[in-house]
Length: 122
Length: 382
Image 1 (cartoon, rainbow over the protein chains, first blue to last red):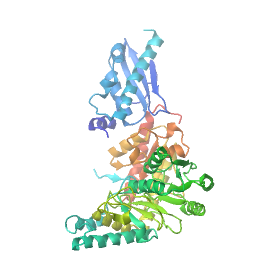
Image 2 (image 1 turned 90 degrees about the horizontal axis):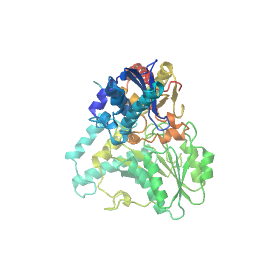
Image 3 (image 1 turned 90 degrees about the vertical axis):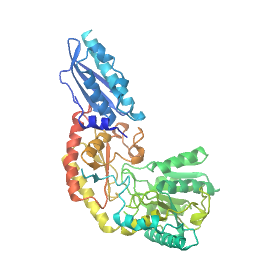
Image 4 (image 1 turned 120 degrees about the vertical axis):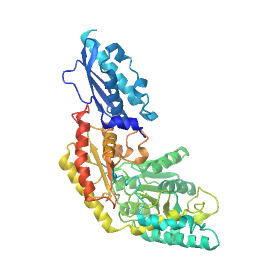
């Protein structure tokens, strides 16, 4: 069902967990629909200095949330906001029914950035 | 890496003894069992021996057994064949915890105008006898209840349920794919009219199954052709498969059952000892000897299966047939799980080949995996 690439990332997902003193948080999904992702951001000079994610979900959800954190780290908030689900799922060969996981990851990040902008009015 | 196989509810390894017996019938004794010549006669003789072995194993007569391609076909034939053959009525009763091939056959019949009752089960997965009795009406033609549940392992009391059906003059069918050779099936004692059996869950080859049809029952075939299998299932018989199937029935024994129960209890005890927020699904007592189904709250079963796989252990979240669907298990929903907890299950299904050492290894790696996944779940208060 999953490609070798997906399984390789799944083996050692990056940046999993929470940031205790996060500047912003974004959560998407709900338990009743299946997957939940919660993104924590640490921002410095408009750049994402640190990012972590908590994921309740399938292998694809864990893998796409890990990939997303790696893509977002170091980017400016504007750049990170532009990360799409296609950017995340590219090359992963996810089964069609699992593509929504990459959508979930991208929207969790946007929600966290929205939260940051609202809080700090930037 | 040596693989540890704990997904025997999905399929089993073909026993070496079985494979050995089958081999001859591919390229040496390859006759069509319907042919007149020696090769045909040889094949036919073996088929009839196999039919007797399988009939004996469930206290039936050989001419009450037809061979099919497996559980799915036997269940389809039962539901559709009985529905089409019975003019007296148009109502069929199944449970909410049937295998997909029964449920989807029932749904298809519903579209053709039949009335279907989907019986509830209790939190252990048992059908209530009074519920069954109440749901039978003058139009009911068939009751189909799974024997050993493929996901949560609960074994129904066929004898009691069968009595009710007999009393009300309604045909009683059970899908015994998971329970066959693991717990008693006696078509006379349990008042069974039709029983689905298959080979690949009992160390036989895939693609073979059987259906017991009590003598005198009217059933409409849906595979027409040369009139094989008493005119009920046309098509050249899968000679090596059927011979392998009967060999698998022959090697099944009580000692294996005791062995599996011992390992099963060790796993259950070990998991409760080492892991918190866990529930054993299905009945604790009336349970398939090889089935364990846990819910680990707050994390998804797919992640557990993924990390177990990485450690060399093959397991599943539930039914192998549903892993391509996002819909949470209908069985867990039926036994009362909230939707949010329906994806948190792990099914371990054992066989005669599992060892104590393998169980020790499982009990070492599983707590670590659960802890790892729980470390990064957003749901701490499970």
